Length: 299
Ligand SMILES: *Cc1c(COP(=O)(O)O)cnc(C)c1O
Image 1 (tube, rainbow, N blue to C red):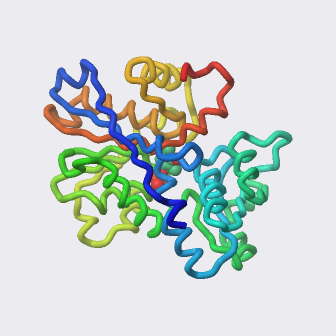
Image 2: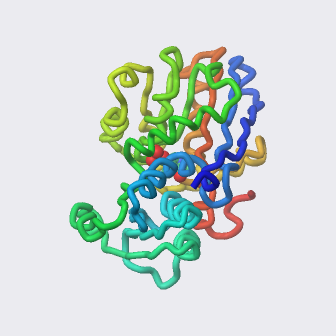
């Protein structure tokens, strides 16, 4: 277990661009995508305390939920494999003729896949009852233990307290909640929702915070979804290619591309004031890009 979650040193990349120098803004990107080739980005942190808990309570198997391209599914399969735990993935949708790259890899790590209809998938209570002898982790790793792990993300930076703004993507909001817990009252956390109209997100984040942390400065922005979760219009793909060409920064189609776009936009339109010192958390997820036709991206 110790070995599974030993820190790999990740690094921050300082972005150089006219739209930054023009406003005297410093932008660093914390490259969590570099932490592990399979358990990339925030999943490394989010799974840590769940698996420790599962082992401490003597469970042999972990069950969790997700879609066919889920970063959480592949990361759970791999961390469980490394920790000597069995894993079960409840996958939303009919079993496809050909498994996605994500599910094939999860299977290689020994994950048992159960495909269920979208209707049944919604009924998590019945499902949870079926797998009650196993250690259950919510879809996307949402929950207290997940945010406890995410609280350690900023420790990867040399001087986390120097940043005025910390920007991250938000799906379930677990990572964002962990980051909020780790910042001081004069820092602001901005979460970029990858979904369209996910009005529950703020409540989900707040539910993971204690009273003091809930008074810290944080905002969720809902206007950078590019059509919705996992939607990737040509405009977004072009932006990803441009981001790679200009900064050698690889981003994923679901979360980090939208986040980097939002950061750029907010600096240009002064939502983030001139002179700020900004950190964007690159939360990983690059494996999701393999769902695109070959040649779509230039990296
Ligand atoms: C899972 C994931 C997120 C979302 O994290 P939450 O804690 O669910 O908000 C963001 N970025 C990437 C790359 C992810 O894989």
